Image (tube, rainbow, N blue to C red; front, side, top):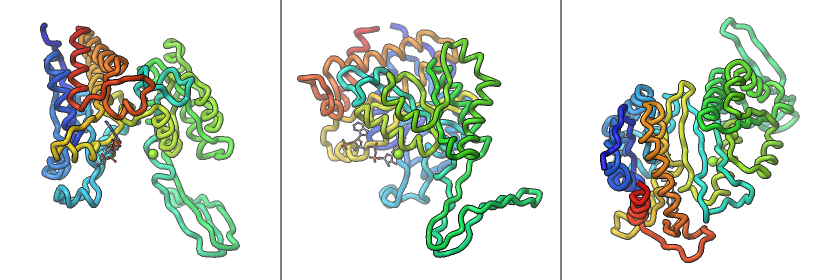
Length: 402
Ligand code: NAP
Ligand code: MG
């Protein structure tokens, strides 16, 4: 069988530990035999990041801007323990943070739903995609522990020297104060990324804040979303048969619990942090969660939502068998290949991505899975496979379909 040809290379960002092992197996077993795979390779493994003073991460982000689509393996974000373990020159920043900042992107996360692994919320028939605004608010705050009586004020000094001043509180004893901010530019990028992704995936978009209480701060988010929607997206949404709607965050939470899924839920930074953990844990496994970073200019970076699965890697190094789930990493590749096929007009590449996803899910539905899923499945008598065994089983299903 002839291999599927590609036109533009994918930006390939290799990573660390157990996911680096899975990365190679996925390429060898599921991609290279079927596709004339074109990638521009960047090694974001911690050793090479250290060797290049993290320049490789910056280069990979620039390449993503140039080509438009990247696929990323999970990477280590160094902490004190990693400094010693890898003998690092510096505590390099999170690659995801660096890439996100370079692309000014928004992260969309969605669970991969499969028969036999049902979400705790019974009515969630389709995945709920969570979009988290990844800038500002409480994540970039300034806090003061108020020692005793006194007056707290909020002061803005304009570039022209003009002051805006408001009293926060007249304290008559100890307390706390916090200053947070956001920018119209960042909120606008977030809104556009959400509207574009909704159109891209043909799903409704929900956005919620607490504008009834925060009449300026949260209201500004609501107004920016509405303004951009009315001016740039309303007609496109109507043509696509999808809906944008704004509601209060508490109302959104209540509705989400009763909903069938199949929509995008856009959240402010803190809400997104909390709610994405809720959605993912209700869907069973971190290993079944995809993640895509979308820039407002339409650049895409696909990855798995989980980390490098360090504990399994250390077992692997000791020569012990591992049963690490490669589904989210496979879906990172299929997401990127499908998008590349769409942009370059290669229907066979898009069809291959669909088939590989189907083959992956049908392998699980036929009772062959890794240990993490075997522990939570509603199916009886399943076969628990090791890391490599699962990927080989997917290859068998795929070959039967091709
Ligand atoms: P992790 O890699 O997400 O794994 C945490 C635990 O979740 C594992 O020990 C395992 O549980 C389970 N798990 C996660 N993915 C799995 C999979 N594919 N198959 C089976 N089980 C899976 O988080 P971590 O161990 O806390 O972090 C390791 C490294 O990943 C850290 O250095 C961190 O910086 C990095 N990280 C990177 C990213 C990214 O690149 N996007 C994201 C998060 C973390 P059991 O041990 O119980 O089997
Ligand atoms: Mg969290």
